[in-house]
Length: 396
Image 1: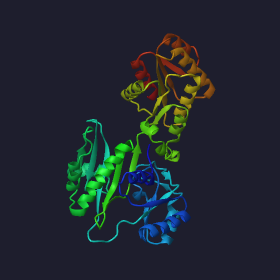
Image 2: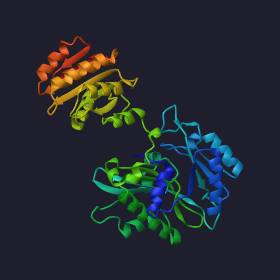
Image 3: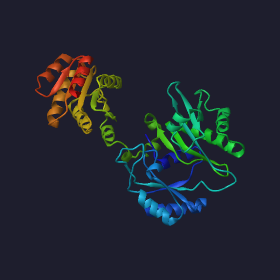
Image 4: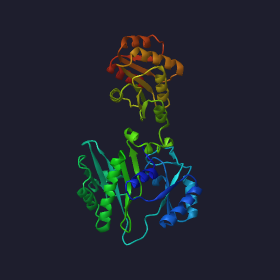
């Protein structure tokens, strides 16, 4: 579950991570009130106005701007709220901005030059351990840094039985070129950040940039936080932070009816029962020259109602050129699934894309007969290779 910047910062701060302070606003008037409050609390006279959407690269799209007075706070907020923000991580249509974060200006003059760093905490899936990835090249796309200057990216892997050790936090501060007060502040920052990551059951923390201010404070200026949905039962206070406006509407609809659906970029819709079979089916589609348009697991109760809902979800994607139904009848009987497909097809009416159905397992022979004798424009197959050949044929 992705969070907005202001929500992620609030979680970080609750674990002792120092952050750039800010107040969320949903109108220009609220933004001005927030700026006045920040001036009272922090002494800042300049404010940063940040669009709050689930996408990176907001600054490149005009979603992050500096306001030097209250008039500019109102003007900039009015420009950003309601805009469709297009960034490298959105579609060409962009994302509608419904709120902004009015944040304190932390790039103030002082005894030293400010420095920006990149720090993230995530799972290293190759080793099954958490790791801290960090770089001196903060404020830049980490992908570009990795491609052009890989020697400037460091990794610190954490032993799960020991947790982050003090020498590791010091090593990170040293590799970032810090000394004195800034060195101590960075070790404190890294330790608090890792603690927050573990205790909040997150799957990703990405802070870009982490700022060393001109007076050697170390703070999170941005925060990309992803919470592990499987752990939300332990964090009811996090669950309410979900912003459905930022999520794929089809995925939200599927979740509401208890279906596991993930939208992808391909042209062949998948309807399966079981995550393992879903992965194998997507491999099958790739081998046949297509690309999966979705991951859809209807579960063990693939009755007519669920099948109809699943078809409707898949058909909402205009890029779908064919649908492959691949069901293994273990708990569920194949003939019941077949009847569900027939009933759903008739209920929906005109389906303009070809449908390939592979039902294997309990009562598979009866299921194939039902499909073949239904009179519907549905291709019934038995073997995996038959399914692959039929996908290739209908896409040709």
